[in-house]
Figure (cartoon, rainbow, N blue to C red):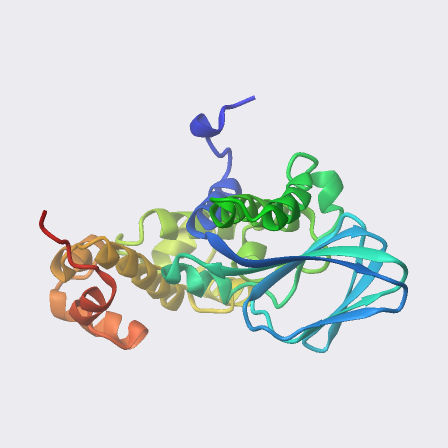
Amino acid sequence: MVAPGNASPSSSTDRGLEELLGSLRWVVTAFEYDVLEQQASRRFVEDEMRFHYAAAGSTLVRHRDRGVDLRAGDFALLPRGGPTTLEARDPSAVYTGRVRLDVPAAEGLVRLLPDAMVACCFGRREPAVAPLVASMAQEGRAARAGSASLLTEIGNVVVLAAIRSWVEGGCGTVGGWLGALRDPHLARVLDAIHRNPGSRWTVASLAQLAHSSRSQFAEQFRAAVGDSPLHYLTSVRMRRAMELLDDGLSSTHVGLQLGYGSEAGFSRAFRRHAGLSPRDWRRKHVQPTRAG
C-alpha cells in the first residue's frame, strides 16, 4: 500500500487521470435528500452542475432528452446541469448535491465531459467513499459552524471518486479526454501535453509519442478528444496561463514559460481564447495586496 503523499502513478493513463482529478475542485452550494414513493417525481431546473446518488430503490433520471436508470448504489454526475426530473420506479431514496467549479481555468476540461456520467455500482466500487454521501446530509442538517466548508471538502472527495469510478468502469461510452485516457498511446500524448505545455510541440512530435503516423494520429486524436492536437494544446496552455496570471506572474514570464517566443504572440493567443489581454485578465482576477 502506497501512502497518498507518496503515490506514484504507474502508467500514462494513471498520470493523465491524476492530472484531471488534480485540476478539478468543486464547491457544494446545496444538498438535499429525497424519499420518493413509487411513481413520484422531483423536478430540478438549476443550471449548476449536479449529482444524484441512489441510496435505495430504482430511479429514472430524465436529463437532456435522455433517460438514465439509477439503482441503489449508482452515482450520476451532470456536469452542465439543466432541467432534470427524477422519477421513482419503486420506493426510492436519492441524495442530490449542487456543485460549482472552484477553478475557472478548468472549465475547458468540463466541456469535454458528457452530459451525464454514470458510475454504476459506485457504492460497491468505492465502499470507503459512498457512505460520505450520507454524512453530507447529516452535516447539512446540523448547520453547525464550519458545515459549509465540511460539505465542500466531503463533496469534493465524493465527486472525484465518482469520476474515477466512471473512468475505470462506468456505464455507457466514455468519450472526450477521459475516453482517450483508455488508449495508452493517446494517454501518453495527453500526459506529455499537460506535464509540459510550454514545450515546442508539433503534430509530428506528438505523433511520434503516440507511435503513429502524423495523419493517423491527427485523425485518432480528433475522434477521441473532439479537437485537433494543436488547438487542444493551445487550450491547455491558456488554462495554465490563467492560473499563472491569477498567481500574479507577469504576462512576459507566463508567455515564455508556455513556449511563446514573444509577449505579443502570447497576448494575441490569450486574447483570442479569453476575450481579454493578459494584463486585463490580471487586473480583473488578481486582488491587490494591502499594506499593514
